[in-house]
Image (cartoon, rainbow, N blue to C red; front, side, top):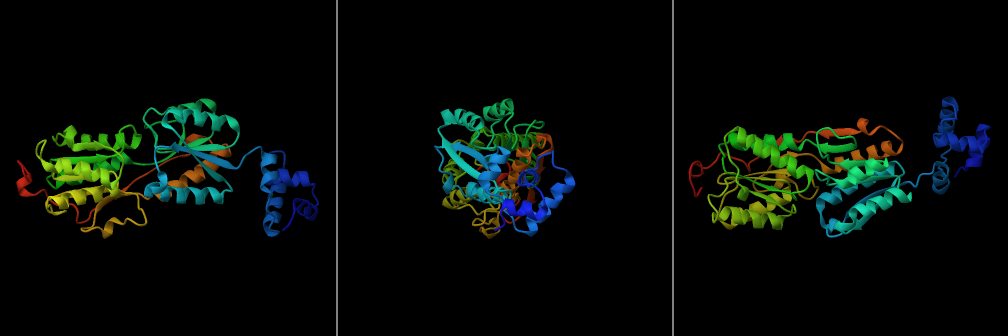
Length: 350
């Protein structure tokens, strides 16, 4: 392994100059910097991480903080997101610190990370519409990126999917198929993406003269079991006519709806329609459902990789307004959606 001193001797430069060139110090000319980088690549020089951090004043660490009440290691969405994120950070020689804290102490832990110098940046996930974590990091001038966004025009770096367009398209499809009793199984009510999806569903429905009652909307953990409980209650008819279609914020929730429909003998695609958002989880492929599931599709692993790239750029000082990316979600129509049953058009039961 080539050392810094050997690299400097090969180039006829001082070790200090070579170190400054490798670490991007502005006093080193561009021609010299490129010469050093080319030689370091050819001679397979790899900087000692401790020395590099001492030279740059950077820790080489990125932090994420989650509520300790959630066991994220059993959440397939988080695991796949983490796969994309950790790989992307490793490519940039950044290490990820995952930290947990009680809900009441979350902000204090963000403030401690930002002031301690233990991390060079933070990744904020699952933002709320009014998110004090974000406002605190902005006030401190601390580098961070957000998985999601709290509004249309925001001053920070983010990667998000167009939740509004995705759920507007899904709702429009159901309306075109004749459905007027449409239920929404959503995530936890305080999260920004949850609000965006519900607004889109209600807007499209209202534009078509359709009222969605509160009993047709649930806000909960996006799990199969919770979805099964909500769908069972809605399909029971105890509170009024049951829905003829379900929109789900995850494919896990779609599994719960399928179970609930089976318990009351409803055929998916003919007597009950389902559309779910598909994060492209490797072990839960909606095309293999029975029947295949109609989805709005956007890979969550891609989000992790994109945020890693943005985090590296923010640490390097890139303007956050240049690091804002929103991608669309593809509507893929499969056999889980069909025309509303004749008996479900005007009355009930369907």
